[in-house]
Amino acid sequence: MIEFRGVWNRYRPSKDPYVAARVLETLPHLVGDRGQFVVGMFSYFRWVDDEADERIDLTKTQKLAFLNRQMRLADGFSPKDPLPMEQFFQNLPWYAVPQQEIREQVKVLLSSIVDDVNCQGYVVRSDREITDYNLRTVVPVVTGLFLALNGRSPEPNSSLFELLDAYIRLGSLEGLGDDLKLGVVKLPLTSKKTGVSNIDEVLTEYNKNRFNHDKWLNLLKILRAVGAFRSLNIPAWQKIACMSYICADVLVKKPLCIRRAKAIKPLLRE
Image 1 (cartoon, rainbow, N blue to C red):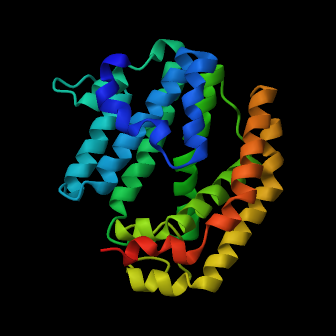
Image 2: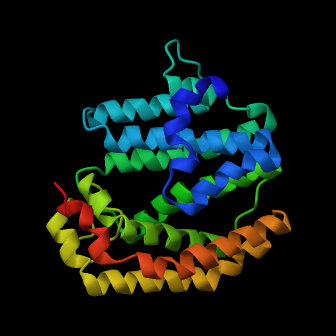
């Protein structure tokens, strides 16, 4: 992937603010091409997500057309005029991983990004819809990661699904201001089950008490389910790494870092 360095360098895991993402940079040194594939796939999805979320010059129709093109790319379609990051995606070391299974996970993850675009404009989703969205966001990431590293499915279980849903909800609390700035509501509203909301309604419902209640509720769910990693079909060292990350970076760090005042700060910036 050296020939694409100038294209994908800005999206690589080392540029991400989260520790779990930056750790991915070690994988090529540990498992060679399989690790390089994981790093490359992370970079590709960072690009796709930026195109869908932050390209204010594109209409919703144009964004959906872009995502449909990425779906076709995941199916093996070769465009006549590929964008640089699409070429990068096509030139990942697919030979080193279970190609068909990972392409299916790519399409599931892309479908969650389609949801984000369709829900721009403060569209309200029910609690069940939020859970479905969260799982379609994170389960293909976890499944694809271990498929690439180990060549087999990790066989996720219901306890892991509960943990991952709670983990994404924590992230939605932490990113509340950023999401609202993009016109997306990623948390359920008890005051409105359907329709369209606005920034003031969301901030009123997620006042300091509700924000803190949901933060601790989701942390408790994660604590209860952290043992779910023990039953996954992955090597012991990966189980230990996952549980260590959850304990150190989530259960210890997140309670201190996730605060409502900090979360809504992006809305106060010009």
